[in-house]
Image 1: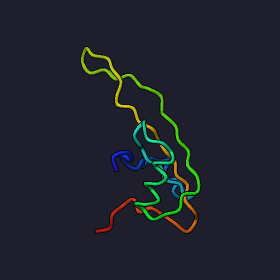
Image 2: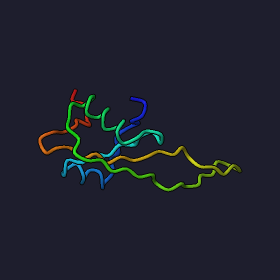
Image 3: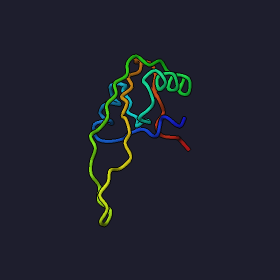
Image 4: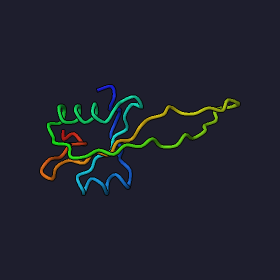
Length: 91
């Protein structure tokens, strides 16, 4: 659970949900096979394919100090057509 940080919900990823593609930010050291196994075990779904990329570094200034925010890797997970992952909890 520590390797998958949170789902990403932007304008583009909402469009991807229509194609049964989900986007998550994960730990930099996590591999595709680890994330695929975790998603399949935890969500009880069948993963067809996965794409990953590391967004470029961006500088961030806090007062006189210039640094970089914490890095992450973004995974796009494609599921079979009859599966889905509930991103919102119904209460």
